[in-house]
Image 1: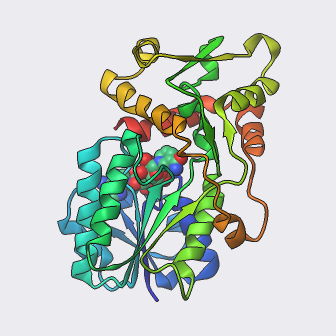
Image 2 (image 1 turned 135 degrees about the vertical axis):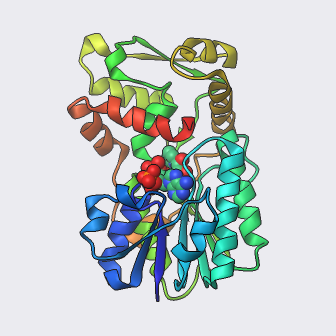
Length: 309
Ligand SMILES: NC(=O)c1ccc[n+]([C@@H]2O[C@H](COP(=O)([O-])OP(=O)(O)OC[C@H]3O[C@@H](n4cnc5c(N)ncnc54)[C@H](OP(=O)(O)O)[C@@H]3O)[C@@H](O)[C@H]2O)c1
């Protein structure tokens, strides 16, 4: 069985790749990279075959996917609907041309009728994949522990703000760390039976609201740096953040909080916990790592960069 993995240099794909290497031989893995010269040392030193495959240049995908049986499409990192959907459709069509037997797509944990703009391209891709006639598994990946600054009002400790604002509503999120998602995704991809033509949810086990998250953050900050979380109108939220982010992005991102109000991210599915056979890494552990040495600026920027493209 030959696997071709996209996104292996990224936050999620690199974790899937790492865990896939624990299960199958490097000779059974192909890594398809947008920019092969930017391959990480983990990819370069692994002994896997590296090929060029750019979602925005469909002609590169045939040679990238040739000869493989299973393909992992890690979703294109952007909140921009068009390029995301086009990229995913190009990968699905190339998979069909190449005779890939099973396509795995990393979707997101919002609901199937989501109010969140960021979910729209995922839902369109899910529908396209289902209609493609190919064997598929859609994996709705939970919200990363590591991405909490994005949801917590673009929190950046270096700005020393006392107030964090979010629009519309607070709501619970079943946070889950990227490494646990990567391990679960690799286990699903290598499973001999099951998961064909299904939509799975990989979630954390203990959903908490942004106010609860704020309490946890404050416990880890010195008293003079502690923050208040305030729910404001969408327009006030956009005005508050407009110096750092474009208006279209802020309004699109604000719809995420409509989804929180609908409890879209609260759902707990036992699948990931069962696949891993151990407790998942908690948001507390991630906060300890990220706030323990106050390195959150880089993480915040990294996650924001993906969506603001
Ligand atoms: N579940 C969550 O909470 C959550 C949070 C944030 C984002 N996401 C979304 O989940 C997906 C994966 O997240 P991530 O953290 O792994 O993102 P990431 O770190 O930005 O990685 C994205 C991957 O896509 C690759 N890529 C970029 N442009 C490409 C192209 N034209 N063709 C093929 N590959 C391309 C990147 O390659 P290079 O390294 O060569 O650029 C990278 O390997 C993204 O769609 C991201 O927006 C999910």
